[in-house]
Amino acid sequence: MAQVLDIAPLRSVVAVADCGGFHRAATVLHLTQSAVSQHVRRVEAVVGGPVVEKSGRGVAFTELGYRVLAHARTILAAHDTALDDLGAAQEQVLLVGATEHGADVMLAGLTNALGERLPDWRLRFRLDRNVMLADAVEHGNVDVAVMLDGSGLDPANASGIVALKWVSARSFAAPANEPLPVVMFSEPCTLREPAYAGLDRVGVPYRIVAESSDLSGLYAAVRSGLGVALLPIIGRLPDGLCLAEGLPPGSRASVFVRGRAGVDPDILNAVDQAVRDVLAEET
Image 1 (cartoon, rainbow, N blue to C red):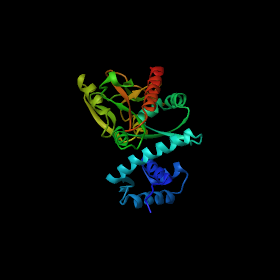
Image 2: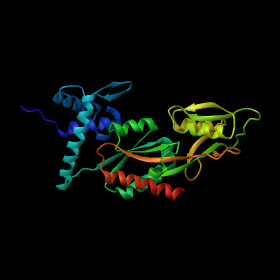
Image 3: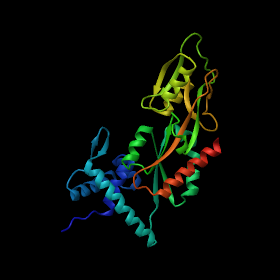
Image 4: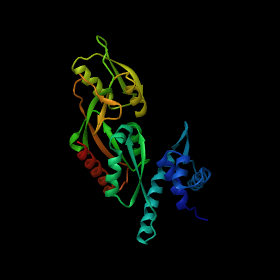
């Protein structure tokens, strides 16, 4: 009997890739985690090898798995197009990646703008760091990603520009005759180099007093008065923070929209235009 790649198992494979694991995939698909695991094993039985393997607390796709994933996306796209043509289409889901600091300043506006431009799609967001989003785009784990380049490179091809500003707690006072205390995102982060360069340019001595891998931790450190931070600012400042006094003007960051291989160009363009709309409204 000929081998068959069924639609439901293929959809589970794609969901595991898009969601980064079996648990989240099961939630999105409204299945049990056991059912998703069985689906993946069925695909592995057909293709004759492992599709995913354990990687720390999560999973990683094997070389064979990435090939399966690419075919799965193609098959599901053709399947869903046929359903749409026959008037039996299911809800379409667009997985959008965004950095935490990008989401903090523009997610609400972006959701509204995308809702207007893509009314037939349900949006699902993945918030992560730039380096993780770049990897997710490369491996097809997100459909599109809104990314921030703190160096401000290639503004002509960017979807927009965001000002970088020094912020502090309202009660913060820089210590006299001591290096400026600075709070930063931990490596890798494209906002570190502009912070170093801006302070070095005007000869302000500094020391890193706190590093955080996420935005909430960085905000907490700044609000507590530990030091100042260089952040992208759109519209109003985050609660409890103010512009730091006596520091050089910040540079600018570029905002880019990137899509996975095979993403519909119209979808990519819609996200790009939505980002441009949001940035135009807020600046």
